[in-house]
Amino acid sequence: MSATRRSLRPQPAGSMSYARGDGGLGGRRGRRGRAQRGSRYRENMTDTLGGIGEGAALARIFPRLPAASAALVGPGDDAAVLAAADGRFVVTTDMMIHGPDFRLAWSTPHDLGWKAAASNLADVAAMGAVPTGLVVALAAPADTPVAFLEAFADGLRDGCAAMAPGCGVVGGDLSVSATLTIAVTAFGDLQGRAPVLRSGARVGDIVAVSGPLGHAAAGLERLFGEGVVAGEPVAVPALRGNADVMAQLAPTPPIADGPIAAIAGATAMIDLSDGLALDARRLAAASDVALDLNLAAIGSKIALTGGEDHSLLATFPNGTTLPHGFRAIGRVMDGTGVLVDGAHYDERGGWDPYADWNGGRG
Image 1 (spheres, one colour):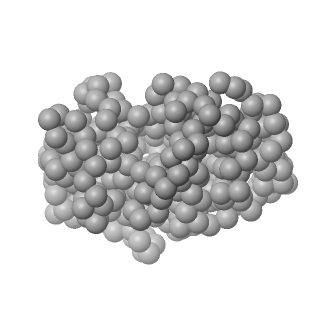
Image 2 (spheres, rainbow, N blue to C red; image 1 turned 135 degrees about the horizontal axis):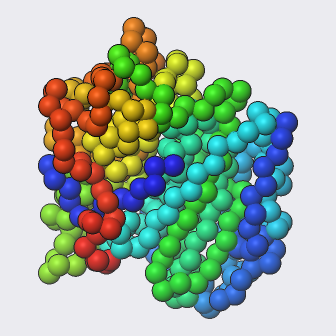
């Protein structure tokens, strides 16, 4: 995976796998302790996790979770069992934490479920694999309404259905914490193909992208510009009608284009979590080459530096007819790092949680 976090401050313009979970969504032994859909959880705010307990909460969540086509044993046992006919499986994990990764004033629980699915599905797709299952762990304050978790589960279900049909939640865990924390592990099937790594780009290759660039970052700028009062995030329902804002809150990356790129002969690929410039530099370093990007093809400075679109950056051999969904934005060159229109680009060009999070929540 691209060990990344999302910015909450505007950026500059035959085998089987076993997913262990000792409780919660995937086990019997629990520990104690889109825009319109997203607001429905507020209809029933009476029951809380602390009030009804883990077992009753899970009983309400299980029926809402998406089923996985590859699941031989799904939620409700000590571990899930997934079919892996290829003999290998892709695995990745990602976290979302209240504060550096999302603001509850802006994101509905449905948004969070959708986005948690999207960010992990994109990492699987970037390997050229088809997503098959998710394991979801969630730690929430005891006073969290159970309806919040139900809406979160709906977001997972709807996100999987929209972006990776057949992928579902096969297990996980539920616990208590003062800070809402979401951790997802995703599995994928290579279907007999070699994985597409970051390290395969070659001099002369075409640099191409599938999916939007800069939309999520533009949405984040708008949220910080219009959704903050006296320094604190506030809900602005009208902003949910803005496409860029929804690209930030509930992105829809082109998951199916990952396997398509692999079949078309992609030599390297990466999920654009943190920003095109930053993630392109990671791919260039892994491949020991330079990537020369065309700013006109990219579109704008925010498209170059903004993160969280979760689009797919790939390289293809020179002369390749790019598969549907991909567009050329540069070339692989001899050298190191990232260039923009032939000049070395030395700005970080993306999100670093340790450098960029301002400590806020809301």
